[in-house]
Amino acid sequence: MSWSLNIGKVAGTVVRIHLTFLLFLAWIFAASYASSGATAAWDTLVFIVLLFLCVLLHEFGHIFTAKAFGVATPYVTLLPIGGVAQLERIPEEPWEEFLIAIAGPLVNVVITLLLVIAAGANLQPDAAAVANMKVSMIDRLAIVNLFLALFNLIPAFPMDGGRVLRAALASRMGFVRATEVAAQIGQFVAFALGFIGLLFNPILIFIAIFVYLAASSEAHMVALRAVSRGVPVSHAMMTRFATLTPQDHIDEAVQTLLQTSQGEFPVIDGAGKPVGVLDRGALIKALKVLGPDARVGDAMSPEFPTISYRATLEQAFKLLQEKSVPAVGVVDAGGKLAGFVTGETVAEMMMVQDAMPRGSHMGPWGRAAGA
Image 1 (cartoon, one colour):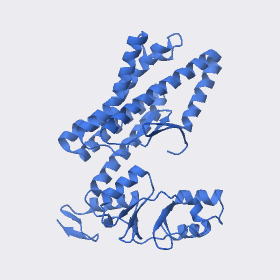
Image 2 (cartoon, helix red, strand yellow):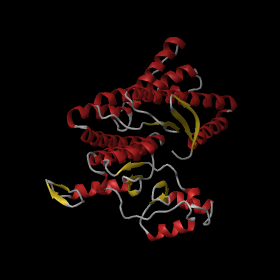
Image 3 (tube, helix red, strand yellow):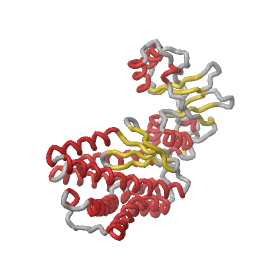
Image 4 (cartoon, one colour):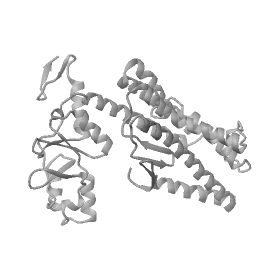
């Protein structure tokens, strides 16, 4: 995730803090200082930091449970609205997803119990106690952890409760359909949160927007993965495309950009083998920062995973997700670039499949064939 700072690594997972989170802390401190003085400002800042430490522990509940099922988590990012753990994949076994999803809220429940039993925290029923400076910090942390556990269990996909709901539905209607239903419920809840936010708390509006967009994105990704399963990669890879070499100048790359409709440009060596990729965003940035006379090799990303032309589209799509790269190269038996796949090409193939008459499917060369 861009605009994030790496602050360390725990069990193979990089912990990141988004810059907006730091701005959020600064705003909280300044607002508290202006209204209540230095003591209240520092008290509020410490409380927020401890709160987000609990959020981080919540995310590691997901991460360690996922790791037990062989699912790695490259990084976790702290945002003003909470934490986001980027799992390489979501297990399609309902009981595995259930355990991964429920692990986060259970961590908050455990923290609450420890604060109550070991530190003598008092769970006051009044939600306003969280913002009351007269209430001890231990009490406030216990209350807010219990709130986090309950809030995350709201069946609004992609929140933890939504994933628990999908796991329950997937055992009866299949993973893809369960995702669609859970996403629709999540979007409905997002509308409800947004409406409540308009009346009471504007922060709920931002949470509602995040929930709505994330639900739509997850449903779209699952649908793409489903349509790519078992399909040869040759069905969706681009075979007519422009390439660049590391020695090309940035201004030459710009001309290629203007003359084609590509958003990603494979970079190949003299033997036709891929050595990197340059997407539109990186190209424009290089033009501004490095200038038109810079070389493509200085601006390209060397992270350009490749697969064999005999692989499946599902394997290519999995690499797109796990590596967070703009494209995946497809190489022939000699290692030369034969084509490449992007998220857009997979989406286009899905649109074509949806438009096909019922009972038809795409033949081996992209033509309609009888079922």
